[in-house]
Length: 615
Image (cartoon, rainbow, N blue to C red; front, side, top):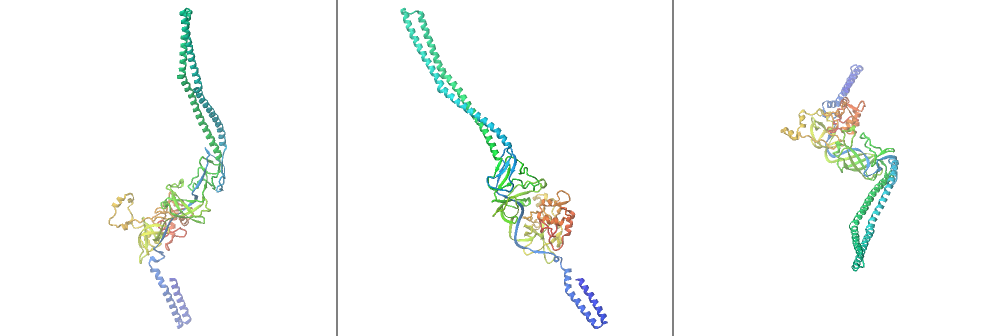
């Protein structure tokens, strides 16, 4: 404006001089001079108010963006990537004892019908064992047959003696007794006759003595026959029965032993035959072949103990192939520990697979973290399962899906942009536009979606807040009043000790610490995200090399979508790291007017990101 006024004055003087030269100082020259003066005065009339406005307007009106607090709907979500998988997988396992080697396997991803050959395992070792076991089985069968025959013979021997041999011997003993009785009777009759004849003189005394001896011998024979029968019945029979029964029981035990040995050999033979059959694995149902390899091993920095491929060794019971049910699909999502507490069972979800948009819901959240690698041992991640609802045609296991889980849906609540909030000494503030200097307000915040914050207390609907307080208000660039700094040792004291030292003259409304905004879709916490002022991005330097890598920032909880903008803006030498010099240069290059974040620096800031455009 000053240059235009000055150029107008010079033009007026030049025209006046020319006019005077031409008119020689006449009346025409004076008239021309008057016209020029009027034109200059008119220009000053139009431009002077604007020049004064620029020099006298308050600082709160120069390039400061504001926002009116209004009530609206706040959707709080968590977005993570995951892999599509089947909710019901039929595992096909190797059933060869002692393991084997894969000779042939059907290509991964092949759709097969029931009964189709999937895997062929090495059979040479099984065939050798089967031949040896067949010989052992035949020997066991021969011994079993011999034992059974011996047992049958032993049973017959018992019956033979009890029902045949003993009865025969008993009859013989009884006949001997009867013969002895007849002999005794005959001898006694002969003796009686001889004695009568001797008394008459017809027989000699010597003959009478001989007949008397014959009677005694007959008596002895009778007693012997009777004793033989008693021994047979009372002793011999029992002894022979015990001996024969013992042999029978021994034969029976031998039969049981040989049958057990035979059964054992039979089972071994059957098992080897089954293993020979199992060395050719067939599909138990229709489905798509999926190798049972660990898809997350590479991400965790490890590797599967055994990779399913031709020539690979396999152990007994190892899952080789999964046949997923493609009509019941789900997504396995890996969630950072800073966000897992926000996710609950039953929460609705939006699933994006390629150009398809599906709906679903959370059906489970793991209570133990996923196995990590040595490279990211400090990063804890949990698995959440999201069931896919609706049409699933075209979905295949292993597809990458982006899942957005709805954490909360707040309706008709006061909202404030995250760029309008500044954190100072653990408390959150906003600056409300007034007729004079902007008024600083302490906020009590609720949930956030990284774009807007739910304001519980501090500002109300209709208040006009500054969107770039750090650029417009010097107070916002400070750490906060020293009087607000808490005792450094208070964090080591119990609640009772802290309460005892609380100043009773200070109102609770002024000393109450605002709540930490919850529900951020990026999962950032107060100490896990880069902020201007009181937080230094270099805090993510875990290895002490005085610079921060993408991995360190991401491990600290910074969302991946923000990392792209941060590194594009700050990493000037493009070495993949941000050092202290690059961070300081980035802060100096941030525009101090117009609010907002520099181009390519990511989304809006706030308590969980960058307020007023500062990194």
